[in-house]
Image (cartoon, rainbow, N blue to C red; front, side, top):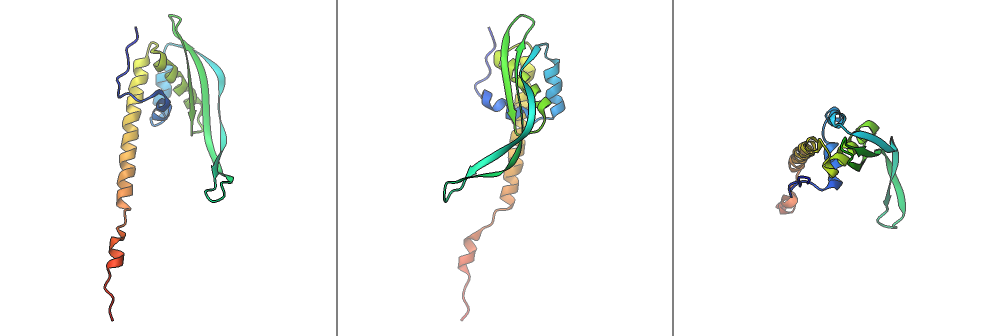
Length: 157
């Protein structure tokens, strides 16, 4: 029987983004250390995608610009025959990182041997994400402008 993840553990849909917060070398090393047979379902790819938005006035679509995208889809198999699939789509141009995250995704989802290391990385990614969010909130607070005093000037006659 597999050990359940704690209730506060992030949803699987967030694992890739949280793992991408960590140094790529750490993620690739952890994925490589798992003793799993990895088969690429689709070869890891990186490239550019067009980001399309809709104009708010006329509701016409327009392309804001290009964004880097890397994706990977793998099937992993443990020594005892358990199989799982994992995937990753990142706003990044590193296909090897996407593949490593896909391997960790598969191992963690099926609780394959070594899944604890993947869970630890996800938790570290959550901490890194929160640290970045706090830094952004601090920057936002520093740029706050109080406009309430603008209308209170006394007029000289």
